[in-house]
Image 1 (cartoon, rainbow, N blue to C red):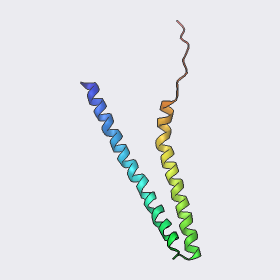
Image 2: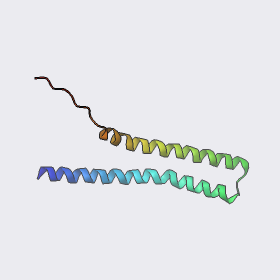
Image 3: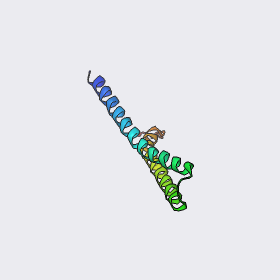
Image 4: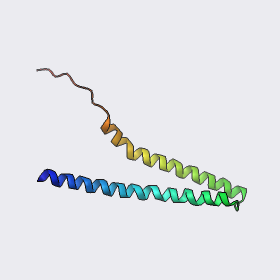
Length: 88
C-alpha cells in the first residue's frame, strides 16, 4: 500500500514538474515568435531589427539552458553503472 502511495506521489510530482517546464518553455518561445513576426513584417528600423535578433538569440540560449538543466539529471540517472568487485 505504501509503495502505491509513493508511486502516485511521484507521478504527481512529475506532472507538476512538466507543467512548470511547459510554462518556462512557452514564455521565451512566445517572445521569439513575436519578434520573428516583427522581423518578417519588415516594419522595423535597422536598429530595431538588430535588437530583435539579439533578443531572439538570448531567448534561444535561455531555452537551451533550461532544456539542458531539465535533461541532465535524467540522463545521468540513466548512465550505466560499472560493476564493482566484491571482496569477502
